[in-house]
Length: 95
Image (cartoon, rainbow, N blue to C red; front, side):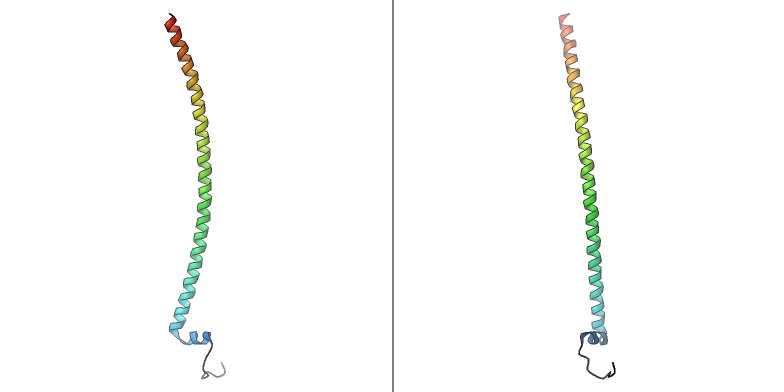
């Protein structure tokens, strides 16, 4: 910077001297930062969605298992009730 009149050949000096180039450069940096932040937040969101999906599948499996157990109990009770009703009908027919 000793000689201000000297022609500037490096990119940084050219950008700093031209306000349009400086604005474009700053906008590009901001856009890249926003993209990186957006990608990071999307990645974090996807991670939370995957955890939620896993949790929901686990709970759905538990509910289906519980329903399966209840259906099996109902099937046994229904079979028992049917046999009792058949015995009652058989006794009524004998009389």
